[in-house]
Length: 458
Image (cartoon, rainbow, N blue to C red):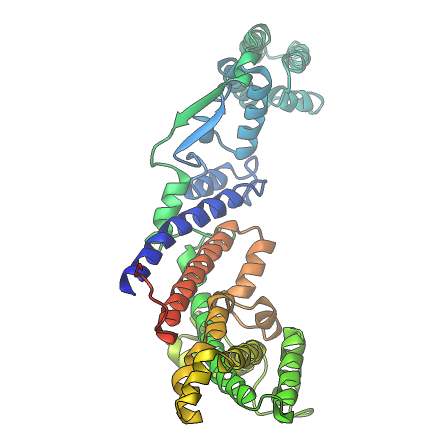
């Protein structure tokens, strides 16, 4: 079995790489600028966070784009400027001319802005953001007419010189279009100093980046949420199997009797009920003394990092608050486990090798536990393969209902705030947990049935 598990573990590596590629690609297809600062208002803060997020580095090891675009396009910041220049290059093809015009127009705007009149201010911005040479020429002419009205001769001379440089660059742009470059592909190699490589290496080394919203390292953002989710969902998983397997065994042994029928209807009812409804009922029955028993405390717990306690001390002090969400998840998923266990045992008890064991005179206890039980575990193990990542990924509904500080709520808030580094780091974690669940399920298959010869060839 060990060689088989090693092969599966090796196969998980390219699977995770594919997931990481898809996750990284999706994180950069969302559009918009991830930085909350306005470059025109806070240029220093914008550039600092842009470099922290490595927006000035290429996306991948290589890029395949049109020959009209330079291989250093990723260095242009802010991203709004990069997109503007890329659109111009894709339309006109002559990148050196467009770059020359942009630098001349930007320098002229920086010089003229303190002296510009309100009426000419629009033309100054439009000159820098011109979409065509004709539009650029119109704005330069407007600004030249304004410069002629300046009373300061020295300022008028310097302004005319700046605008003459822009006009010269505009003429070069208009006179030498190279649209044929937009039809030709170009392959650029960027090496390992790219965003994907650094993101993947950081994720594998425990440093997956920083949050766009808070600026904190993602490990600090996710660690308390991860521990809380592992605590509540680990307890729910253990409780679900502790309740579901014996209940399924009992229903299988009471097949075609009233107990089996009643329990099947009850488990189907529990599973078919929405999780938020089931959790609300448990809250009313167990946490509201004016309605139900009032044995448990409701409400949210104080965040772990703010409590000043160790994690286990914090968990122990708030154990009664964690029981309700854990019990909600356990009842919902335990119903599925019970039904799967019953189905597996009923099918196993009808197989030929069970009839053979009975014909040999083995006791019903021996037939059930030595032969039928392991064979009946296969549906439960299959359920574990998907239930394990679902639970440990965090239940958004349950965490929201009980105001539980886990990964589910963090994923929802990250999506609402466009904090994609946090969101996609969580996606990668859930993908890794999913592969781990499948690997554990394969190992359980081999334990449950000796006929499964994992890693051996006939």
